[in-house]
Image 1 (cartoon, one colour):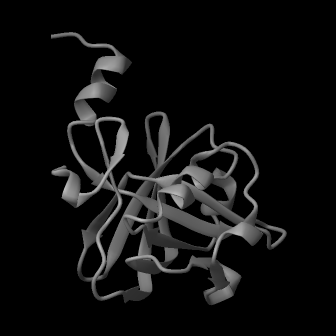
Image 2 (cartoon, rainbow, N blue to C red):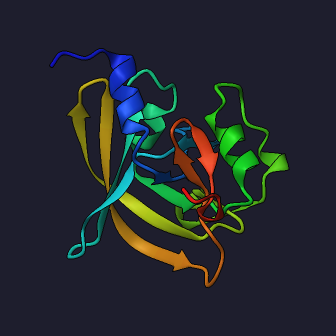
Length: 160
């Protein structure tokens, strides 16, 4: 049965996902970050994860370089997600973060973060799939995730 992009997007929205902000630095050392919900583990040995980024994203060249951090957002970090989902420039001074390995930004107060080196970059239609090897991680005890479901933010207590 044929379908259009809108129908496909609506059907994919039935799958609740966690919300992440993926961060790196550009060639000049400036912080770069984007909101991403296409994140998953790939392998336990070696520990690999992936995320997908639209090929039209101006941030793509920075993420194809050496390192990135995947920050899993808490339910109270919706505004952080919105800030990094915007195509406008980010005001990093308004967001709590610190420098991790190779000065890659690590967002404060996230449920977890994964510090990764780029393992491979794969074509995925209108997106680029970036696979990273997890070299360091930190997971916080407690807290609930921010979710995205049917085109809107949700939390576990919303019944999502």
